[in-house]
Structures are given as structure tokens and as C-alpha cells.
Amino acid sequence: MTQKRRTLIATMVAASFAVALPMSAMAQKKIVLGFSQIGAESEWRTANTNSIKETAAKEGIDLKFSDAQQKQENQIKALRSFIAQKVDVIAFAPVVESGWDTVLKEIKAAKIPVILTDRSVDSKDTSLYVTFMGSDFTEEGRKAGRWLLEKVKNTKGDVNVVELQGTVGSGPAIDRKKGFEEIIKSEPRIKIIRSQTGDFTRAKGKEVMEAFLKAEGKKINVLYAHNDDMAIGAIQAIEEAGLKPVKDITIISVDAVKGAFEAMIAGKMDVSVECSPLLGPQLMAAVKDLVAGKTLPRRIVTQEGIFPMEVAAKEFPNRKY
Ligand code: GZL
Image 1 (tube, rainbow, N blue to C red):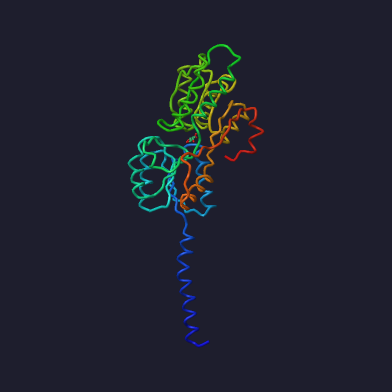
Image 2: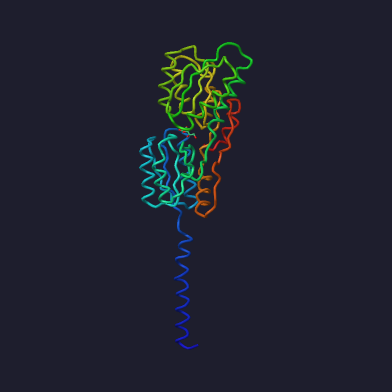
């Protein structure tokens, strides 16, 4: 083979690598996901954040994570920064349902797909996001209501309920209230005598329960808390008032986080309706499908159960959050 021919073949081989490299580099290009998290207000939120971060790392997704300290304006700032960074996909858990249309339209104009996780928005224009993945909060409220109906069916007398609502305007607070009321209205003895937000935190839950106890005292038969953190704060207030949770006041809660299982095992909580925060795997699978050009269902519902105190000790070792 002449030198000239050897040089020509070597040049062609090098050129083929040059073409291949950008292709393989593109194929290897990391997906960039911008995620705006509500905050770190509860055990549930912390578990949700861990699930998202751990799965992104495991799946090789470049996660741009922002914590909004439960403020909508911080979430909107983060969403705008994701547009500026030209991320591939944007996902977020909207702290409240309303006030998102403007920024969602900016994201749509930037041609970045949006996935709603955990909570939804009340935008009428459903083209502003690809899918909403999270729990059915109304059904969680119904499960709490059904458990209470069952508990009181063979009793007589008033069933006065005080309610600790989640963050005002948030999907879980609106829907857990709606579902609970839908079920209990079939039993006129069950009355919600006080209802106020504890903003999903232990501290606020304790503070509001102290006010309920001052105002209503021994008239209170049941506490319905929209999450375990508020219920655990309220349990502290009940004990400091010299009353016994479960024995004097039935405790119904939502989330089924570790703290709830510990309270049920200690005989201080009656039941917790499960609301799974482990959305990381579903979210990363959806992100990869989106980038691969697949279509996603408009709604991805998290499957979950209910845990009364009688099963808490047996179930606790199996819990992942
Ligand atoms: C529910 C989630 C709620 C939890 C709270 O999916 O949005 O927010 O129930 C959390 O514990 O703060």
C-alpha cells in the first residue's frame, strides 16, 4: 500500500471519529431538570426532597434544586431562573393552587415542558403543564371520614371535631377538607366546631391546638389534622393541657410518616392516612420519557393506604419514609 493511500485511510478514519464524537456526546448529554420545592416544613417534605435528589443522582439527571421556604414568590423566581438556564424540563410542587398562569406562559413560550408534582394548580389552560403526578387528596379526606364514621357507629352523643387545616389555598388543604366533609355529613352527630390552618408545621399545629383547647376544652372529642406534623404538635398541646390523646381526644391524621408510626406505637395517635412522598422514581421516569419524545398521561395518581394504630408496630419496619 502506498504512503499516500495509508494517509488517505488514516484521514478518513479520523474524520469518522470526529463525526461520531458529537453524536455520542449528544447521546451522552445529561438531561437538566429544574425543580422548585416548596420548602422543608414537614417530615413529608423532607422525605419527598430526599426521594427526588437520590433518584436524580441514581438516574444521572443533572438536578437544579431550589427550596422556596414555603413562599410562592420564591418558587416563581426559581422557575424564571430555570428558563434562563434553558433546562430541558421543569418540575415543581406548587405551594398554593393559584397565581401560576403568568410564569407558566413564560415557560411555555420558552418551549420547556412542565411536570407538576405532589400538588396541582388551578390554571384553566391545561396546555401549561404536561402532567400532574401526586396523591388524590380528596380521597385521603374521605378515608379519614370513613374511619371516623366506623369508629362512632356504635356510640351515642356528640362527636365534636376540631380541624387543623394545611397551608391556606394549597391543594391538599382544600381537598382533604372537602373529602372529609363529604363523608361525615351522613352522620349529623359529627360536627366540625373549630377549623384553622396550622400551615403543615408542628409548631403552628401546637399553637392552634392550644387555642382550640382554651376555647372548647373538654367539648373536643376528635382532632382531624391534615398532616402528621400538625397532629404531633397538637398532641404535645393536649398533653400539656393535662388531657390524654386517643383516650380523651381521638387523633386522626394524614401522611403516615415515621413520626406518626412512633406516636401510634406510643398509643398517642389513632390513625394516619397514607400520602406517599416517594415521587422521585415516577418523576425521573417521566422526565426521561419526555426528553425521549414520549407522551405522558395527564394525571399520574399515587397509590396509598391507611394505617390505624393496631397495625403500626407490625408495619413500621416496612416503612420507607
Ligand atoms: C401532600 C403534601 C403535604 C403533606 C404535608 O402531598 O403536599 O405537604 O401532607 C406537606 O406534610 O407539608
